[in-house]
Image (cartoon, rainbow, N blue to C red):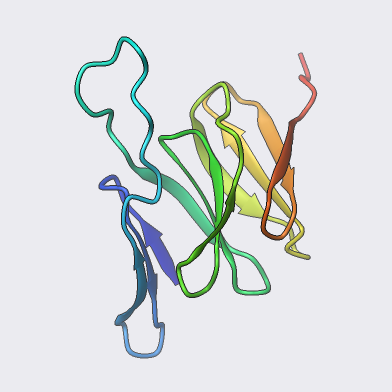
Length: 123
């Protein structure tokens, strides 16, 4: 089991005893823009395990990130144009599909280093 929160943490839980296995602090912290004042809010918006035990996540930094079962970072996508709100992993674990705030999808492939392409618009 895994949980993500608005404080930017991802916690991987042991389903057997209910205790944390790993905590990823500041998993999704956006970089402030040139006109930004202060620290922009971080936050994890969606997490999902792949069949091989890795974890994919999206957050307020508009990136898809991949983590090992031990909580160690494996890779990240470049920042998307819009806020990514949901992520899903394919059944074979080779793809991560992220949806953004504007209704578009981004398809990412790779087991560690992610290569992402936006889906074509269906307008």
